[in-house]
Image (cartoon, rainbow, N blue to C red; front, side):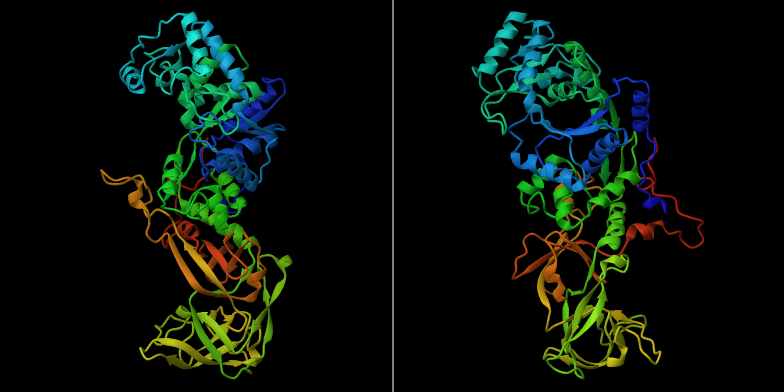
Length: 579
């Protein structure tokens, strides 16, 4: 098996740390992880790595993994996102041991906040957001203490209880931890614990008008649940001292946090804020638009979950961030679909063909293999009739030397069918080719001539008398730039959107078996690519989304050039990540 085909998890620094903790009985023989998304958008392909890591190490070390929604911001969170994220995780192949919510702990978090106040380690601040920002300092300059920092314990406790009771408007006051405004780690400069928001929560309704900040709820939620290993992306490395401070100040159970590199791709944006903008400003047709890097979008496009799991295992777990070339993901998609997707013949740009020596009104049924990579997939009957469709670009009236498909006087093989010869080209008054008249050799059924003669071209086709009409959406990369953030001054990532990310074909003709496909099923249109039946389909009109083309650019990139002993993997992609 080649390096890009390896899917066996190897040793990495996270698994080594877990194994050492278990061997030394650091958590009383327990092992527990969690995946803690905020329900403020849809999960994307970068999340697949964190999801897989948490669930798979739990299985490897005989522990369990919970799904916990860190739902602390009702202004941005919706039940739609909760349901979508749970669906995505299950689609990837993982089932949470429990589905939990940070909002379940709002009462305990409030009591702990009062505990910090009573200990003199938290205070109510009246500074506005702008004033707090000015007091915070910079990476090189320390912050300044708030003039409200030295309020008495009694005053802070009274004001915080009144905040909870709803006496103050949004933004009037916040509760802050009293840590160190001169800390080189800005996260420790008196972070906000609670803010006032008179907004209903999707789970708790109007029970609260103060809501905990993510950083305040996150570590304590892990503690409440008994998480042993909190696996986080590297962006939380500088937050770890803050989580430790909270847990130490409260004197509660302490999980172990370990950070790892995120999964990022070329030609891709994964920022939730930017993905939200694409949706809200109409650049795409919703979170599950097949051009979106969301898991819902990839599923709708027909990407198999196993391809994402295989990619994540191939990339591995690293301590430094890097960017994976999107071609590597496409390689794993093709690799999986080649093994699992049944074949269908479909003509995207039909050119009518009349087989003049085939009896009119009759049908001959041919046997076509469903998947040459999977013998158990069997075969299907395909009708052959007098009237056919072929791809318009499979015919040239005056072909160049290396064009081996149909041309006047030339014989080609029809896939699973017969040898046919083009006898006459029919044109309209504008000189455009509108049909071909051909003859077939009935002795060549199955694509082989008993006299041993050879043809160099094989093309796909569909019986026009039995064809199923369909619309096909040809999806391509949403962004035209390898790095969508690399734009001239004054522009943003929107400037790199590709105008060619979607082309709709409305005259596609498919073999009749396409009517039996299930919504969400991905098949290969022979010679054209992989396509998935879209939920928008109806009995009257099938709609297919192109998952990916057949041409594997990643595999070509890995082939050594002539005169070279080999090619090193490009630094931004592909090779197994080190520890």
